Length: 304
Image 1 (cartoon, helix red, strand yellow):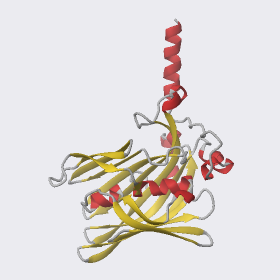
Image 2 (image 1 turned 180 degrees about the horizontal axis):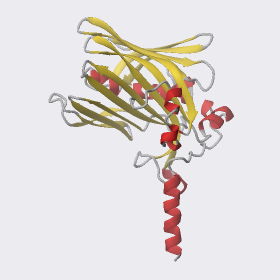
Image 3 (image 1 turned 90 degrees about the vertical axis):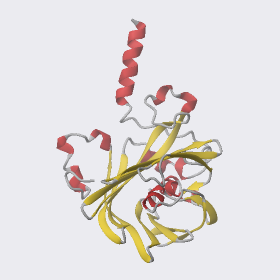
Image 4 (image 1 turned 60 degrees about the vertical axis):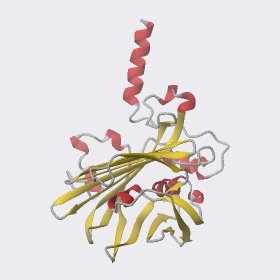
């Protein structure tokens, strides 16, 4: 009978796992992530859901679409590198991460693109200075691709799958360095953790996939410009520049970003501008009655 009770309690804990928030990291650390402002905002059982108007370069043209940045903290398994079903019994395997789900949707001619990237960055920067996992998937009518990077000791183990012959299915490792795909999380966790000057970085998975470029560490120059209301971060690659605009005030909301590069000898750019924001427990808003919330994000009933 006692075993049956434990089983029922386990099932109940699992059912609640979608909506429970992780505990804040222990105090005694230094950084924005250890302040009351940070804890009150990011451990309130809600996520920040941001909708952006997107201008996406593809096939030598600029397409209009939508981008979403969804930030939320959650309890993460250090060993399995997945969201924990029952954080209360995870003990030393548990780490609190800032999870970013970043999606882009746009149409090229007759067919659509649907892209999504997830980045899992520990909140306790002093204890865990590197993002643990990044995954990316892209679907369009020609096929789909998937790439995942997992931090294992001093390397990122990469598994990549593609319908293109020249890319195919590959597994390889890259040295542990800064990731372009963790920059947005770092701005939200603590902008002071964005480095300045020359640094080696692994380029973003969206850009490398869309441009069929090899994923390898690259030397870039990172700089920032602090204005009256926003901070502009610039990441200068040899043949590309990425700029990110963030609110100067906490919680340092991402106001937009832009990429500039050359494609077929023609200068191209991708730009996203913040449109609408919701601060909500979106995982509990999954009924038909909640569909009007999409209007408040400027989204259509069925797309994006």
